[in-house]
Amino acid sequence: MIKKTSQENFWKDKFGDKYTLRNSRYTKRVNIIGNDFKKNNLKINSAFEIGCNIGLNLLALKKLYPNLDIFGLEINSKAYNFAKNKFTCFNESIYTFKTNKKFDVVISAGVLIHQNPKMLKYFYRQMYNLSKKYIYINEYFNPTPVEIPYRGYKGKLFKRDFAKELWNFFPRLKLLDYGFHWSADPKKKNNCDNSNWFLFKK
Image (tube, rainbow, N blue to C red; front, side, top):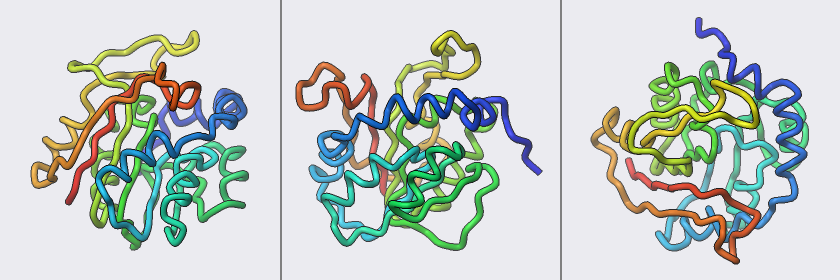
């Protein structure tokens, strides 16, 4: 049985509550994740986001794909209580989540960076197994693993080449596209950090 990590407990608690309130106003995700999907002309009927918070990414995709079935997984109860009123959401850990359902695209956006590095292989495996067609990640990038302080806390934020690690674990994945979201872009300002995104196809 996999035990909960200190990182998961951190996001379940008051810090996760504050994060939810702090980020709930950043709603223009169509210009971020939406553009990444649109430029690649993805044909999808379902999307599942790991660590969806209140679902801003999923709701942005719903604007582009009105018939899209959206699903989320969120460990923080306050965020989950909001999300569950908008779409199907599950309030549990990615490391214990189980379902027989597969989704056209599985998403991780700003979530891998907050995972315990020792647990990443389980996270990658879940992403791969839950995906029917595509995997999309949007995270902080560093060519080598590094930990950086996060709002005064240690052991809560890690940067590395997540895409390369995922690809090494599952070499049959095909890289479709990748890019950079610049926080100073007027079309994205106040709605994204400086991050790199990658789109893979199974």
